[in-house]
Length: 411
Image (tube, rainbow, N blue to C red; front, side, top):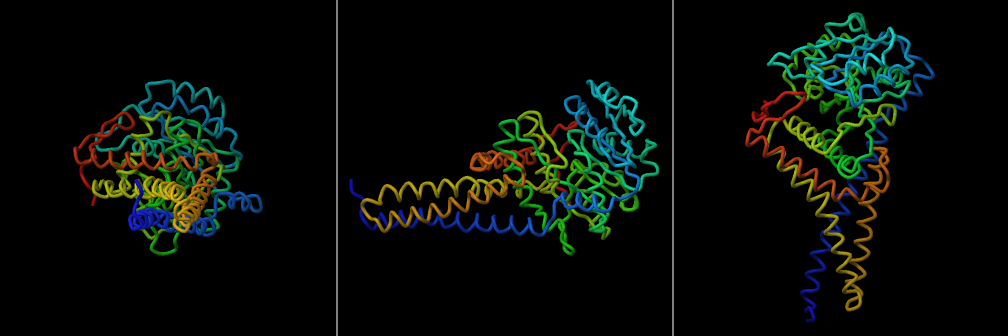
């Protein structure tokens, strides 16, 4: 059956619209990525600054750990190798029922910089991690006289010099809070396929340019690594002021912003590494919790985000592929339409792929994971949709050995 020419043109314009949309949207993404890279330095700048003029001040690292036998040894090895001279480390072992404590003591050996605070119970009106950090600060010698308090997660790994680089960058920017986005691992299938798309959506909500803006800053921090001056931490009430927060990093960042203190968020650029989740179920629970709290427990906001992620990350690229396929099929009948669609599709694909390759470079991800964003965006949208459904049905989330009801929107 021969397609009438008028129908051919309608199909061509319909498919071409998708390619144009891909070109425009992902061209804007690429532009914003380049602008962010120019405007916001990475921790490598702090590394250079520290080498030229070494920072000073007593630093206490507080690590909350709930059943972290999988990762605790790697963290401790990295901190044992940390070169910063005025360093103390507090391990707040929170109701551990696995080998975390034994592995921690074996890793510390006789290193006098380390101490352990054991926590047997968590009050019902506290979030588990927040309570563990609070106990680490208030129940340790190392935190008592520290000039800086650094809160990091147990699944992080410090490259020697990370702390000095952070202090140097903090000094340059005159910050009260410095937070790092760690360099994530890409070993499992979900890290390679979904992780960059999941992080990309979070960064869309909290762009680094806005998190570091001198005015009208969008408060943001990453709980994997938050470095406070002692004075600023005390001024906002510490972790006790956000004791029921499941995403204490955002809660603390908002208190810093409300107090008109200076904060900055930067890419670790390989100087701090993290494997966030061991398996897909943990990944799903963890990212649903992150999105839920980032959206202030607003189910509608989560549902809208899910549609947007699917539309821009999955539907637009597939629409563009359909445009290219249709162009190839009709090129023999109508060269003008066929080659126009092919040229338009090629331009859109090149811009789309360039943006995703830029994301891969920033994330230290393998280059070949870039086109997998089509699948990653679809699965990320699924996490957003699930988070919305969980809120509406008041399905509790389990985290750190406890169940939390997130079905009430925050004010």
